[in-house]
Amino acid sequence: MIFEVKGSQFYRDGKPVKIISGAVHYFRNMPDTWGDIFKKMKALGCNCV
Image (cartoon, rainbow, N blue to C red):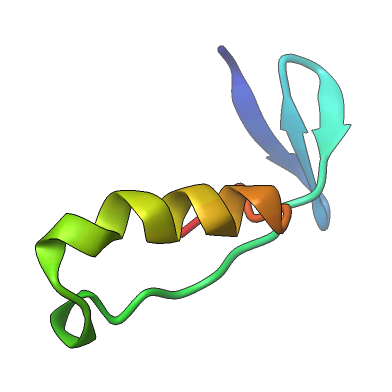
């Protein structure tokens, strides 16, 4: 995989990609719930945490 930044656009393997990020305050959640939280974030379209 090749990740590049050209100007204000991100590219992965030569194709433009939009970064959609979210934040998780891990210390506010029990470790056994982290997997479910990340799955839900992915379902919402997040590709960066």
